[in-house]
Length: 338
Image (cartoon, rainbow, N blue to C red):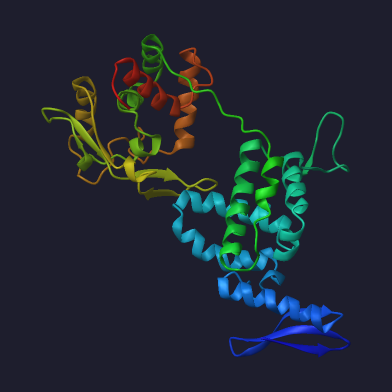
């Protein structure tokens, strides 16, 4: 590392990867350049020295390096949804800024958060009765998800020694309040009304969800080989789940949501009787629950049946996931540890 004069000013130079690179420049005096060189050498000894010119890369360029590695750590459904947030909301709106610009002006990220929440009206096509959007406003949860993925990207830039700090740490204060939906727990009479309102084909699935607390994807992805309804103590094993990739018609098999989600679940004789007819005559790798025509269950198709049954049962607004909450409430009321 050395100081040299260049066009009336001084700069700090070093050989990096076999090439001579300018680490800092534009100093009016040689002493100023020497002082910066001393700081750079200190950073180098501590392992804190940034990659020369690393902050000059745009966010879009860094994303192109980062995403192919990051996406391998995601489940198929997460890869699709997170990839959409990166493309449509992060790269599209911030990709032209350099990493240095984002670090040195955290207000860029704060303004981006506000922009996502309010959207952009198409003034030429909007009327008093109807708003036409160039970019629709996003809900609080989606804005927070977009900010979260940007935070992850810039954390990776810090780890790669491109920038020294993550500007998202400052903009966290500008995030919209999280709006959590209140959990809903069904009473025994409500469960009875829901089961009665469901077409007979779907009743065993609803009974299993309430009785075991399985997640939706775990239930529709349950294979015959993972269920033993004839055992002295009926059991099933959760080893995979079936998901419909958001925005597409593709069904994908994946591992359970978390490591602890791989589990063995017991259920009652009543549920065992409901399942026995569904597994009889099927091969080990076939799924227990299918559509009335024998196809894999698709969430969006089942939703039509679900919404109609909820209205008939007087349970408008009920989500399938609320059956998992109901099961947890049943365990607590029975004095069982979760």
